[in-house]
Length: 427
Image 1 (tube, rainbow, N blue to C red):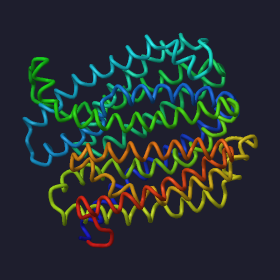
Image 2 (cartoon, rainbow, N blue to C red; image 1 turned 45 degrees about the vertical axis):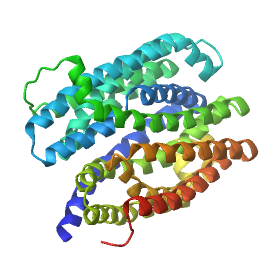
Image 3 (tube, one colour; image 1 turned 90 degrees about the vertical axis):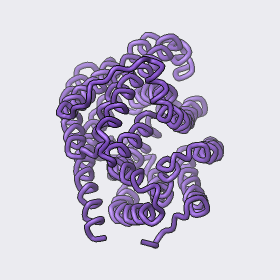
Image 4 (spheres, rainbow, N blue to C red; image 1 turned 30 degrees about the vertical axis):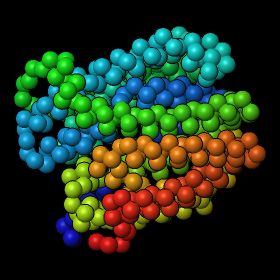
């Protein structure tokens, strides 16, 4: 048991260190963007990124999650042929889904511009930005291989190098280009992450295989089915975030979108990195243990204890020092969202409670139940977000986030207990 905790702690420490570094890089990047572009510039960039994330979520078929599960299971069995097959199929699927993203963005660019900005002035921008979707989907292939095979040091290396190089390139772009640097910075960042991920995975070799297109679709059926359902949930997340920003734009102003983006970036971005870093190792381990009740309860409980230990002091810092953090990380113009940040930070505790057992839906490939629950959750979440914003402004968004995560924690515990026998505190 101690060895198990030590292994988890080691992996968490590795990616925790990486994410701390990424947080520092993100702080510098956000500060530069906030000072140079101001709230309006952040609002424009937020709408670009939200639109691209929405399309990516709709077209990438959830391969970044479903393929990790398949690679992890094959790697645990030491089945080199199966790993090579999954790798080969994935390498083709990322091209197919990447081109689908390019097609959708390019041909629907006028409508995307009109929906996001109430005009078609950004049509060309969206068409050029479609390239970033193809590049990002190619990056998925290498990250999935590294994560699924638990090459955590290589994945950590890719994160650090990508963040550092990206910052060094983006800083002068914004300094000299201002608003005009928003579009090229998105594409360049995607290209840097791709190059670094490919370089980090270059030492991993697979058997040479040749497959027909029908065979690729047949062997990739499980990944595609699971990934499609997961992509629907990811798409719903993006739709909620997108509609909230559109609602703010229509009922408030683009400046409010910038304030909202800044507040959410601090908590969901920086605190969310903790979830991301821990999930990098947690999901493959849980997938391997998913057929043994005692083992997956051990994995869930051990991960939850470590997650709370890491998360609690960080959340308390955000609640206690949110005005100063906003002033330091952005500028005095952003201090007005400090109350929203307090509610967001408090809500992250309940997100942690739901997060650990919530991975069981995916580890068990129980995607239909997962999708059903998600549809209900998203409907409630969107209603709360828009309703609270309409009556209470930006502070209302923080309160609705807290309420939503509190309800989610309760329902996740009840459902996973009923469905899988998951229990907190029983190791």
